[in-house]
Image 1 (cartoon, one colour):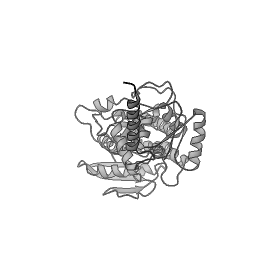
Image 2 (cartoon, one colour):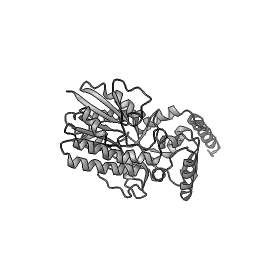
Image 3 (tube, rainbow, N blue to C red):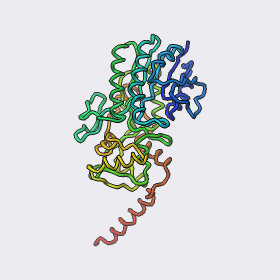
Image 4 (tube, rainbow, N blue to C red):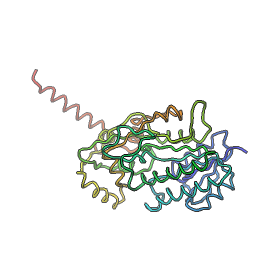
Amino acid sequence: MGKVVLVTGAARHLGGRFVRRVQRDPEVDRVVAVDAVAPTHDLGGAEFVRADIRQPAIAKVLAEHDVDTVVHMDVTGTALGAGGRTSIKETNVIGTMQLLGACQKSPRIQRLVVKSSTSVYGSAPRDPAVFTETTPPKSLPSGGFAKDAVEVEGYVRGFARRRPDVAVCVLRFANILGPRVDSPLAEYLSLPVMPTVFGYDPRLQFVHEDDVLDVLDLASREPRRATLNSGTFNVAGDGVLLLSQCARRLGRPTVPVLLPAVTWVGSALRTVGVTDFSPEQIRLLTHGRVVSTVQMRETLGFAPRYSTAETFADFARSRGPGLLPPETLAGAVDRVAARLDQKEPT
């Protein structure tokens, strides 16, 4: 029998794209797409199973389809449909627990790939300049998706100890962006006016949605010669951008807010349903976060096609011009600089 891959979170954009992508692998015999709601996009020739990973019935799905590879993409910070924060946390944490329990009981499981986040490192004023996979966070995330990711990774480590025969790969993605990505940060960057924390200009990293699919595909296969795709890896595009650079490239004006008032602004934005300005999001937009991708390149053997700047440029093109189009802003700056040069004494 050929390889049978089960993908969770298939109703989401990235999950659906990965389901279609993995079907093209000649080594894959069948793809089983799982989600609690029916997808609105095409899943190709995959078999869709409507199942809630929070329920023990997921074990039956693994057994009935003889699944040997699980790609767990249903760890996310955004609700699908009308679900709120409670539903998201239950799916992230309880759903992962149930899925891992089902994998532990299955003798056919050979490989587990988990989509995680660099948010497990948190964001604090005394953070190191660059996090490696083994750097402990100065301050553990206190809530939201970041805390969910920390708990998920804890359960995954426990599973890896109990099933050393299973190859386990945890991919910690930097902020994922792209033309069709739906995330709290993408919503924030799409605001007509971006509130920022007065006196701070955080460093940010991004990874393109296409690179996310590429590295998930790599992790779900047998490792290539001289590489190892078991373990925990940071995944991000090369380079960093300052938040101020992001705003200029989007043509979005910023409104600096004193730190004590940022929480109030976040609450107001959540109330009107504009964006998820959670405490962890605020910390990221205050202190930033940069991770090392040496292990991604040297051990996993993966090289992203897009840098952080190129990822952001692709995202910016999909959002259209802001109130201050970059070309207009750059032209205005050049004209002011030229006039100042003319007034300087010779």
